[in-house]
Structure formats: C-alpha cells, structure tokens
Image (cartoon, rainbow, N blue to C red; front, top):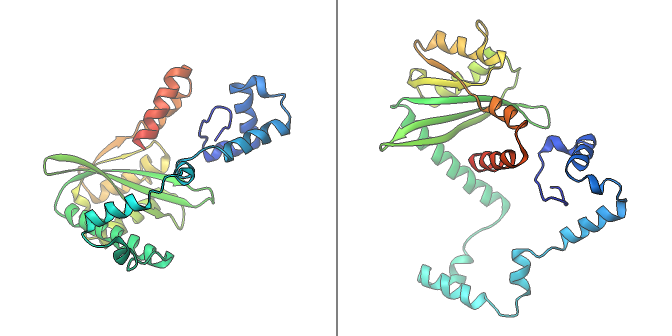
Length: 243
C-alpha cells in the first residue's frame, strides 16, 4: 500500500521500477524526499489507531457486557462452552476442510442433475505455478447463483489438452456429466480457443453443441487503463467489489 495516497498496489507493482513510476506519476512533489521522510511515514502508519487498539485503550471494561451477551444467546455460562472449544491450528484446519468438503459435495450433487455455464481461466502464481480456475453460473430455486467450482494446479503444462484433462478428470471424479455444460467462457489465449488444440476444441469433441463465449473482462481492463483518472478510480472500486 502506498503510504502517500493509501492506494493498494498489486503484487506485480512491488518491483522497484514500478514503485518509482508510481511515485513520479502520482506524487511528483515527493520525488526529492530523502529516506528519513519515508521512514517517518512508515512509523506513523504502524502507530496509527486501529479498532482493536481503540477497544484496548478504553477505560471502560467490556468483558462483562460480552459475557452477558453470550449468556443470553447460549442460555448457559459462556465460560463453560468456550472452554470446550478447541482453537488449535490442527483443529481449526480440520473444521475448515470439513466445511469446504460439505459445500463442495452439495454443489457437485446439484450439478449432476442440472445444466450450467462455466468460465475457465488459467492463472500463474508468484512461484510460477499454473492454476486453472473454474467458475459456475446456474439456476437454483429460480435464482441465479455464481460459485467457484475448483482451483487446480496444472502439473504438466498449460496447453489446451492439459487444461481439458484437468477439467474432465474433475468432472469424472465428481460424477458430473460434461453434457451438462451449456456455454463455456474463456479468454482469447491460444490454449483456450485454438482451432485444433485449444480447450474449446477438445470440449466440443466431447460435448456436441456446447457454446463457446469469449470473456471480455481482460479487454475491458486494458481499456480502463487509458480512461480518465476519476472514471478509472470508479471502475477500479467496482472491479474490487465484484472480485
């Protein structure tokens, strides 16, 4: 985060030349400041008032109020219940895994008997690992839902055939028919839309009549880079909210 404008920068912006470019473009009056000035900004940021510090610094005890609220909700002394709750790292991790497994099982069971649209995107992590993301849009109880189906590592390469096999293996594992896919949305990368060796080509060989749609979010982002400052900031807030 920039300590001058409080703008949150992405991981790719942490390179020195990009940080210098941000300083020149957005804060030209600060380019001649010495290291001590920026160190002072960092110290002020670290000492800034936060919500937990505000609660901790108040003179009025709030433990009694919290205890009364818990007792009203639980109908038992809060201490008796809290003592039985294990908060170790392993226990919390197991509970997260159980909840995620339950959600995934419910979603996959529903997808076995309904049609849906899927959006696929291949992304590269900072450690150079390739990741395939799959998002769904489907109708349940007359309402449209959007869910993340999976995020799986592409172990071999990022070619269209490898991407298709990751998708197909997941559907076989969860007993979801590929024929339930109506449209599939991807970006314009050759691995996705290649005529003979792209993901769409392999998918259409297995699912006749599947509709291929181009995801335009990447082009919209490129266009947004050349917009005015006020409109660009507005779109940036919208994109962050959607994501």
